[in-house]
Length: 442
Image (cartoon, rainbow, N blue to C red; front, side, top):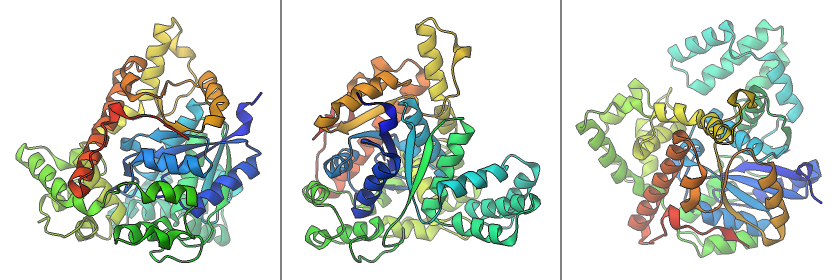
């Protein structure tokens, strides 16, 4: 009989899957002693604020053929969100399925260092919040202002210069930041997850050049989008995954410019405040409203809008959220969807809602696919799950009890339909609607 201690989770984008991801997956099993690896995969739009070039189903299939046992979907409103919201949602999905182990890829930070930082950083303190506000006033990005505030907090706690320098170094790297957010979310929600880390191998996260066996996803995407052959990627992508991607249609994000412009113009005509959308400040809303949208591709559009304060990723997320119609009020409501769903379920079963444990953001877990030889794992997860498991999208409405959970699910249906529409416009591929999708079984 298997038990949950034999299961490790990975939160990932696989945009697309490559050797570095396989390296992490294998080490995740080795470090935790797990027999099964469950992936929580970003959906149609990813954290960089761009549409995924391959659909979640194709990325799930690639992961399964490369060795993952089951893949669940992080819905677009959270897979395209800030690192904090993305990490919190992913961690709460693990908790909702009872998975006790999480392995994350980092540049160079260990789980012990993350725990130490969380022991001494108090982001709710007056000193931290004051430092954060002052940094933002001077035009720093949120990430830069936050690092400064953390450093100030550590200094107040008596940290020496070596720790301050190390902290700045750690929290300036994308994978380290995500790992910190995973650890922070688990502690904030009192989720007893054992965190392990695997340092990335080979190219840096943003490295644009293909090199060696461990090229970055950035370099691989660039090669694909520039019409490069999959034969050139044979060293960098596991064969089983490469075979999935080589025969699959992909979406070039360059096609986003026209649809985003039309969406912005519609909102302005209707009198909708662009600043009501997630990640859009008043100042950034003005910049977007006054943009000419004459750039030839999405990257150029984002670069035309970014400033010292508004990074490429922040601008891209803002544009994506306007395009998808994801408002700040929506995201706030969906963060509470899990509790609303749990209260509704408890009420239906005659239980007291006051007896509920702390609940994260995920109100359900949509299963994208699994390996046939891992069916025992699915049975175990169903028994342990405290949130509904959705294997057939068309059945979600009958499984979800709360309006907030249903609205989040419908937002994912909308995002999928828009991605499918973009894909058809970009390359003429007609894909099945979200509600008619079939689970991937390999």
